[in-house]
Amino acid sequence: MGENKNKVSISLLLIRIMLGIAMALHGIQKFMNLSDTTDFFVSLGLPSFMPIIIALIEVVGGIFMIIGLLVPLVSLGFIAILGTAIFMLKSTSGFVNGYELELLLIVMSIASGYAHLNKKIIQFMPPSA
Image 1 (tube, rainbow, N blue to C red):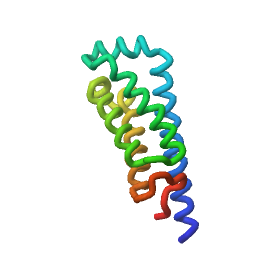
Image 2 (image 1 turned 180 degrees about the vertical axis):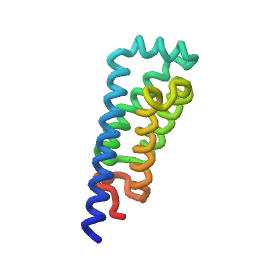
Image 3 (image 1 turned 60 degrees about the vertical axis):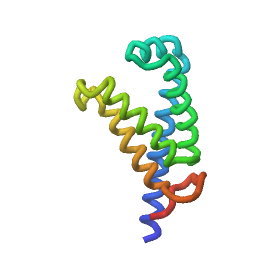
């Protein structure tokens, strides 16, 4: 039984780390091209400060996700960003070549956040099931 708990913990750890890397890289990309990103967000009717906030959530949240800090809270931020992206940009494109990546990242966020629902602020390995 202990071996299965270890396998589950390692599996969730890999999902959480990959989620953190993916989100951090998306945030870094926004910062690297901030003027074009801001223009795009403004064209969608969003305020010009939103790209900075979203990029910060993605970069800092990605780092936090990788190290296991505030995972449930970071997961909620990711879900909000990704859900908004689906509804504002991708919902008419369909699943394949549309919102599949965002939906996968949302599911990874839910799994990571749920696995870390406890009273510890930082925990690298998910708690054993």
